[in-house]
Image 1 (cartoon, rainbow, N blue to C red):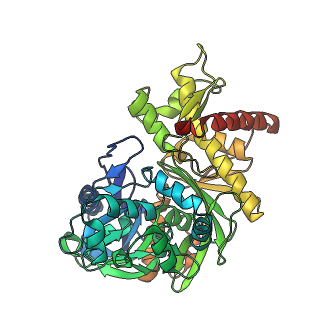
Image 2 (cartoon, helix red, strand yellow):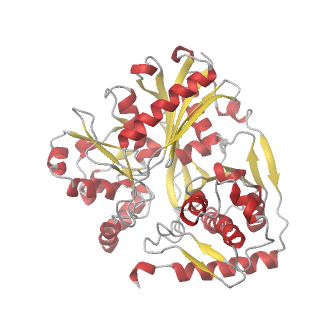
Image 3 (spheres, helix red, strand yellow):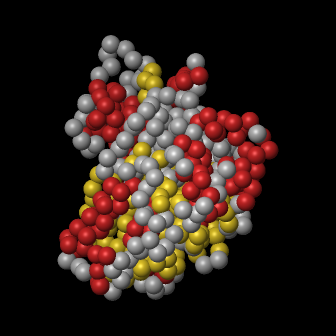
Length: 495
């Protein structure tokens, strides 16, 4: 059994990828699922649709690889983080749709917490997170307070909370395992990343009963065994999608950085075995936990990255597919002075403004769809640059290169502009499946398919390097205009 099945449950689609021992993809399947927007700022998913789509693509990937479950050594899971599900322990039925990480409905709860400065400070110190609707804790609180009898049933131990990894493991094991790993737990605002435990004080501050919570495991160990159509395959690796990508990019040394260009944009820097403290509005998070030892990362989260390209397609209708964005944008030499701030769900790091909203500046009669497309792509790179600046200030490390992955990293125009802005090479690996590969690596380590991180690092290969060519004067002028645009988009809902 020299194959690993990686389940990559993302924000807009469920994917399954089968890797062999050399790290090559031998089977892959993907299926998009429904996005629900019941009110402005609300984003929901159907947990049952997530599960059914994930199982379907797992079976399709096996068929495409001409493999049976008995050929699979282990399952590794990586998932959209923070998205919150609560379900009935007896029936396995969710009590509502899942509240997605992009959802902003708990902004007022977060405002109240921030006003309690001692509490907010304690949350940041213990969890490494800022108080924001992004994270799971206030989503749990909202569900318990707004779903009939939910709080009463939770306190009685009748309900279970989980991020998407927990939900999938519960379903895969037929309800036998209610677990998560340290990377996903570290995104809840309920988990002390120094002690690696659910924190009693945080649970009290957010009014979340301990009876709801899953057991927290390491990122690479036996977590349960699949039943049903995948019966007999052990589940041995779990990590939130961004930590999985950091692992899959083999950023094993402190100071190494990766950026994932997915629905959002997520930059992580390996910070080693000591919890970092950010003074520039970044997050400290668990990078992975192997055995009893945790390693940490600095993280900057951009809420809207690839999603702005989807908006060009679905909202404006100026492209037919995401790939068309590069073709359209490359027909003009620059954005013509247009700046698009894609704050559709507020702004993440380093601003953390839940009330910012999307805006386009610099419009003239000469602006065309080509300029809008280019400004949309460039907005992804500008947001990444802001996070990188904060990260270098926090760490005192000037990075030597940026390793990139995710769907939008295949856009050469965007990657060249990114290299020009940050002034160091952008390096794209041969495999674009780094998130799934990271989950596969964690699962494979637990069953002895690979012996250590050194062996995994030997499998990493660069596919293309993008060298910076933009003059510093032009780069500085662009960044100054971007900053002006961002400031004007902030706090829009409060005006």
